[in-house]
Length: 267
Image (cartoon, rainbow, N blue to C red):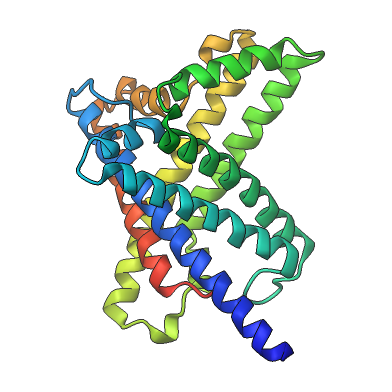
């Protein structure tokens, strides 16, 4: 009886993980496509989660798809929560550091899922992600020691982005893949997606965190940027819009990598 319950729990956890990875992939592909359009001069929807959902909801069955993404992200949150409670799959899965990392991811995906489901329920006409970022930063700065707290959060986001990029470059994700079941060509393709997509994703997080730190140093909440403004800032570098093209392509590849992980990840 206990073994059957364990198997059922394992199956539920696997389904939640794979649904969550598919939903995450959809969002990254959509944001990447919007970022590409920005790079080539399209000033349409914002290249962030809200812009991606707005773009999707205008399509046939778009409302249903937005709900599906929201539910998928709830599944992602539940999977990460289960890792925090029961341990992560693979060696050393019971280590406290891994459980804490999964708990942090569960909180992150809970926030993302809530925003997507709120949008699906008809609350999507509010402020943009950039406006929300500036407003939250402004309110945080009004607290005692506010700039220090803001700077610490920004530094944590930036460092997290660097860690994401470095881990992707080192291909640490391979330990989570069912390599024994993957044909060599598929394995190489998935590794390419994981490295390029992970580096691009980490770069965006690192840049967004750096802007938050800059806002704290300048004591100017307007310097904080959401995903859209962060992506647009890449066009103002010496590389011009071509750096954003590379980052946008990388985000699309990370979305494809998420779909590959949905099929090949050990859970």
